[in-house]
Length: 68
Image 1 (cartoon, one colour):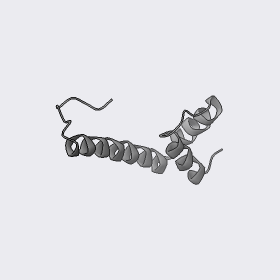
Image 2 (cartoon, one colour):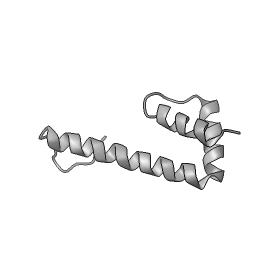
Image 3 (cartoon, one colour):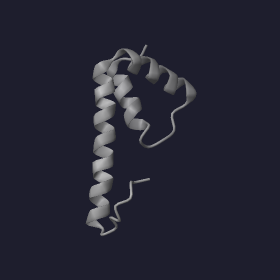
Image 4 (cartoon, one colour):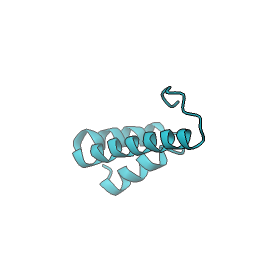
């Protein structure tokens, strides 16, 4: 079983690289039981989206379409 520290590390790494099947399985098992880590993942997703939208607007590329 992953600790919350290990789970948050994996969620962060998943932003930069694909996780292995084993890592994904361990992470999903942890997330199924840990509300705090589920909240952390939701917050990370929100911040990533907000940063992408900010950069699009900053660079004048905002055409109203959702980010990739």
